[in-house]
Amino acid sequence: MRKSIPREAGASDYNREMADKRMDFVEEHSGVTTRHVRQYSFDPAILPGNIEHFSGIAQVPIGIAGPLLVNGEHANGEFFIPLATTEGTLVASYNRGMKVIHESGGVKTTILDDAMQRAPVFHFEDARSARDFGLWVNEHFAEIKARAETTTRSGKLKAIEQYPVGKLMFLRFNFYTGDAAGQNMVGKATFVACEWIKAHFPGIRRYVLSGNMDTDKKSSQINILRTRGKRVSAEVTIPAALIRKIAGVPVDIMIQQRQVSTLGSFLAGSNNNGSHSANGITALFIATGQDVANVSESCAALVYVEKTPEDDYYFSITLPSLIVGTYGGGTGLATQKECLELLGCYGTGKVGKFTEIVAATVLCGEISLASAVMAGDWVSSHDKYGRNR
Image 1 (cartoon, helix red, strand yellow):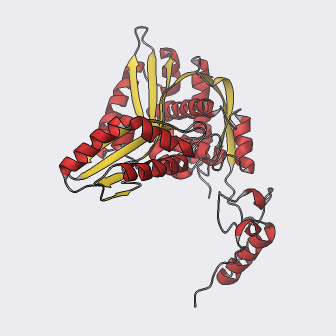
Image 2: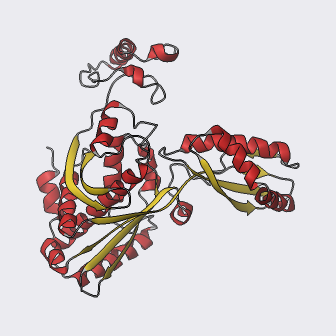
């Protein structure tokens, strides 16, 4: 007979008593006694909307790297970066990169685009009907936009892309979502818009709210080209003497190695010609209450390098689909809120600042790892800091 996990309806399920009941239930089933999972410092009453069957806490160590010097449009100055990870050498590596970047004058950051999608698909009798529907959508964009925005105070419909395939029409709704990451926001707004569309355009056989072209939590080429979340670039120019000091090679060799790395990424079919953007993004996401599954999209990265006329090393990295928020989701939970506050990034009006800090952090990790590989101390560093035996 199937045994059910203990639970109560509504808010009464979110308290220490119910959490303990669930852990008692699991301990009896498994024969394992838990102590650390049960220890936490906040009131479970804050958790509705973030988790179901709350039972305890997974504690992930947080290390601080920095200072990170950022010259952005939203983030300016020095920041100390909380990184939640269990990978030895990660914090040390990012800290090393931040030191190099600080000596080079800091990271310049620029947000290039901002859009979150929901992509419904509409079914028609034939391809001609689907084409005519696309024309109608263009003609009635203002009405669709007005309908969609009735569901949200901060969400704004920017555009609707069209991708016809036979008698199907995929629409990709693009929203600005303010300080929230916005997936739920745009889902609700798009649903209301689609219901209005269905009521006003004859010939729609049916529609599905997501035809999978929004590519939620999946790596995709369309997001690299068209943006999902924030499109942000971080760039730095590192003096040639400093490159020689940290990597043990001249700028020309660093550029050649970048060409080789890009070729390897092409051969592998990667969404990234950099080194390890997912490392810093994941560690920051865990620390600050982001939806960690969005790393699958957010880690896409486009690296460009060149030798400057002064023979220094220019390095840039663009994250085309960085999905972050400073309001809503897990950002208001106890430790996650504190980490955002350490960065001056909690709450409304702060998402641009946080976006630039994430991009700058990623750049530091790229510089550090590339230098370690060229200097030959990549393996020795992991042996020294990354072994736990």
